[in-house]
Length: 258
Image 1 (tube, helix red, strand yellow):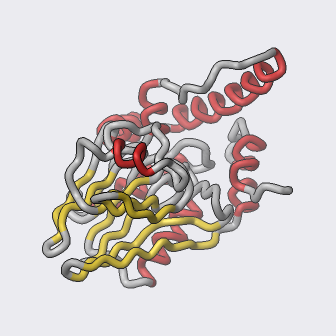
Image 2: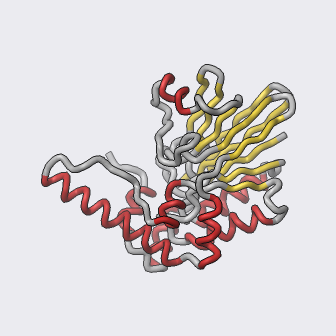
């Protein structure tokens, strides 16, 4: 049995199509999960929502399942990610600039949504996934951590804290996204994997990330895959569609210098 897991598309249709083509070339999957953050911060929010929705609706969600992420929730509710308060005037000015760019990007994405798009994002919010794999056990899927779509479970999260995030769930394999960093680690009682980001990977910019999980009885093979996409073409598309925070998003797409 093979499970494909996608996450954090962020309105980057070019990267999404590259991943779907790679998945097809790799032989496809028996089931596919999408762990949210479909639309915000990229040039093609509605196209990404509708592409994922069409895949999920092909077989009425039996093989392709979708949940929402924190930025999908922001587009539905107008909420924003909480950040620490400024410590001085200089940090206040920096924080104000970040909020202005971030909020203009989110407001722009919301303005692109049709009512059907909005209703779809509302439906997939606050969801998790679970599947029992014969011979292996239970696999769970979530956006950030179970029960919270904003918390951080990262490669350097202490083991005890990471185990606490999973304390109220039962299973063997836990799969998430949100951090835009791929991860494969073993905790007491859990195998924990982050499949990374399709549309805005932080660990390898320009390389859309996703995961393939192959189950053979009690054994599991994890294939954390990378697919190249053209960063500059995506940034040009941001300009072409009138996206209001091109520099803010471009800085998160391009490799860091120095």
